[in-house]
Amino acid sequence: MQFSFGPILYFWPQQQVERFYQQVAESDVDCVYLGETVCSKRRELKFEDYFRLAQMLREAGKQVCLSTMTLLEAPSELRELRKYCDNGEFMVEANDVGAISFLHENKLPFVGGAALQVYNQHSLRKLVGMGMKRWVIPVELSRDWLAELLAEPLIESVRDCFETELFAFGHLPLAWSGRCFTARSENRAKDQCELCCIKYPQGRTVTSQDGTEVFVLNGIQTQSGTRYNLINQLKSMHGLVDMVRLSPQVHDNMTWLRRFRMNQDGLQPYPLASSESNGYWLKLAGLVQVDEASATKVENYES
Figure 1 (cartoon, helix red, strand yellow):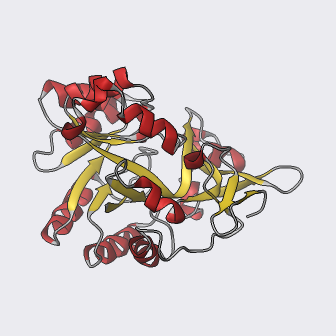
Figure 2 (figure 1 turned 60 degrees about the vertical axis):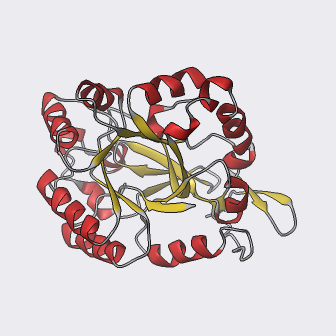
């Protein structure tokens, strides 16, 4: 089983991003994704900066992928997309069908991001035929669904042609919108946002009237209020998941990577915090947390 760090989903200052990737270079992670996937106005790092970091990480022995935007809204974003697809050195994680079109036209292999929302054998087989070498499973898919899908005859015949990757740690990306919710929370228009999301390096929490933390606002992206954590489900992934993705957090990334590696066979389980959940993988509601030690379900209404 391999481990990856996904792209940084939040808006961090350039110095913080550079520091994080230096730590990644010195870690034992297998694969790293770089690039802005949420909002094109986040320009602390440009394509050239990500490309330089990608080369540095490759020299450190890491697999490197460049991740594309998930929601494209302007011609300038299409031009930026082409830069990523035509980079000439690194595989690309395609997070929308526009990127797939560019890559397929140029006969380039790619990673299919979770935002593509591939749920059935026909879509999966189609993308494999177009050059997809790794499939990032939709975040709400369960283990049972994945096992059934991979066992379909249409997929069994090409199973050796692609890898599977699972988002297993971090606040789940649930939706993207043409509106910027972080700007709206500060009573700003999207076009005059003043890049206010840089003030929220872990996103901005949304609570219900009863105090439940239901979502995290991250610009135009809405994330789960609980942090998804499948550290105690790694053993159930063997034979199904080739790569486990950790989404970069503000703190303790290397500590969590070490914890995940140590528990690959379920021999060193780690107690989950009340603000964490694991329901989707277990074919349960997303807010549910299953305590592996007592085999009980806990509704996760606290952060």
